[in-house]
Image (tube, rainbow, N blue to C red; front, side, top):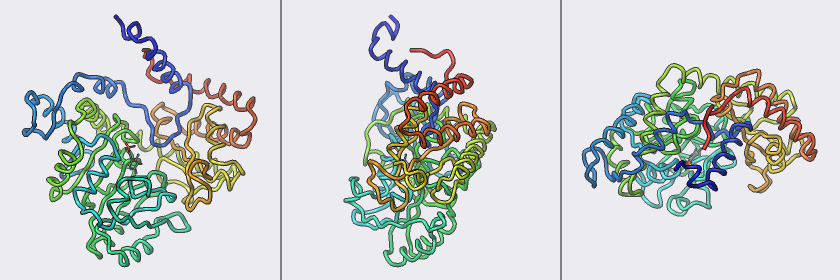
Length: 414
Ligand SMILES: *Cc1c(COP(=O)(O)O)cnc(C)c1O
């Protein structure tokens, strides 16, 4: 019996999701399209195996091939980032961060992390999270010109004497000077951690600076620009290897998802190919076109523009349209973005002033500068005509024509 015969309800939903991905423009900067090979590894028999523990010291029998699979993922990740030690078992980015904190800190320790509205992630100490009650998070911000305010970071480090200085963001669009951060951390005796969840693929592709050789601990997701399965990973200096491994298992998790780890091995092999460097370069070139076009349309670009794959745009201040209304209008037009707070946003997180969007997924589809110009035009049209449903429908039709020319998973159907 085929899958679709057995479960027609689920098949309908999966095919609808596949159609949505094919016909729309995926501009959420944390999303991407994995290769068919990664999809195949994710759906492999590796999902059947319990493998608590680490290679050579598992708590279950029958792990000899799982050890090989996990070993491949680890050695490729080491090669990709020049890491001394890698743990590929974190189930996603948030648990990777929690495990990293628990490995190197004690409850009550102070962490200097970036303010959420300036681009930081929830797991970097937002009051709604569990970790905010365990560690003492102190927040730094970006300077008026959009760069990290290293002078302020140093002043705050001297004042608060953190155990850990944390960089790496979800909505920040500029490069980070890791050497400056490391020098500040050394001055106050703090450890350094970079969360490269968003930009791991750009680092692997040689397009952005790599903190791994310099920082004590680096965490990442594997499913954003790195274009692997949903998952998390911790890269660290040998000195922290034991503590990190213990914190992931048995500290925080049980059995690792070995099908995801197999898919990571595939994704890392792909990221080691020369073609991935071209991909990473095109992500940035495409983001630069969006920057230029949006500036020309009169939008305020947070942080003054982009060095990476994403833009954070103040739609409220620029066009009098809220982030939520812009996101809804763009959805109707077939463009998926997310509403997002801008630095020190006066509006609420449920209807903030900004939208965040980026180029990893459309670049995977093969779109280049010419398509980015079209997309920027449609996005502006949708935002300034946010209440004109006929206009939004006509944009959606044009986008369907465009996406038809960039096939996604040709031949796939559930
Ligand atoms: C996406 C992200 C995470 C969390 O990853 P999940 O896989 O959603 O748990 C953590 N940190 C940063 C900076 C991120 O952008």
